[in-house]
Image: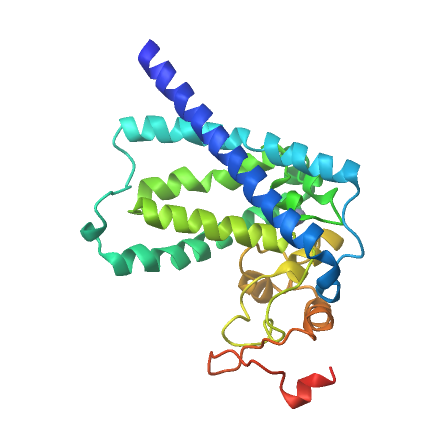
Amino acid sequence: MKEIFEGALLFAGLFFLAATLRYLVMTGAYYFIVCVLADKHLRKFKIIPSFSSRREMQQEIFWGVTNNINFALMGVAVFFLYRAGLLKVYFDVNEYGWFYAVAIVPALLVLHDAYFFWSHYLMHTPWLRKLTRHDVHHRFRNISPWAAFSVHPGEGFVEVLIRPLVLMTIPLHPYSIAAFAFITFMLNIIGHSGYEFFPRNYPTSPLTRFGSCASFHFLHHKNGNYNYGLFLSYWDRLMGTLHPEYEKLFESKAKNNPLSLPRSGLINPKPRREEEGV
Ligand SMILES: [Zn+2]
Ligand SMILES: [Zn+2]
């Protein structure tokens, strides 16, 4: 019994520590490089007029770290599920092949985004908003990258709930899990970064039309009736909750971006003539 308790505690501590280090180091590096060092060169891409105040940023970090309590709980869940042999994680990549290990990552993104959209949508109903304290995340209107994970642990619990379920039902190699964790972490930081760096026709190109971006999520912080998606925007397009000003805001911030995505899927190095005057 003592052994089980110590094992669960060890997993809880390791998951909490790993999540907190990841949050502080990766978000800190992004914040320092983009928002401090390069800010004066990136003003034309800036969506927000200014960053959160020092006090607001402290609040963002406080909730960002507190929310990692859910990763500790996930560590405990993983420990018990692993002991019970209920995890579908496999360690020999040849078991399902490299194609599967790579292709499962975008598939997980689509699945996770669908879960996020609907749980987030429900968190905007009065009862669940109160229960999960979703209002904590909406305190941050003038967002910074630190706000990416700044939610009340009640909301964070709902958000991580899908992860053990995925680990129990979908065969995943640790490489795929690591790639998914890295991509989603970065997308979340970029979504809260306050700059729009994506190619200037990102919301309209058939290649990226269903993606999300910083302008997309910024508008959700501005008006919680729109843009509930996280990594993708297709549920909002489907459900009629896409912010009407989304493309206009995006274009106004990305018009100076030299990159655009044509239908061919190749990147245009120079702006097209008709787009120059936009
Ligand atoms: Zn947010
Ligand atoms: Zn919300």
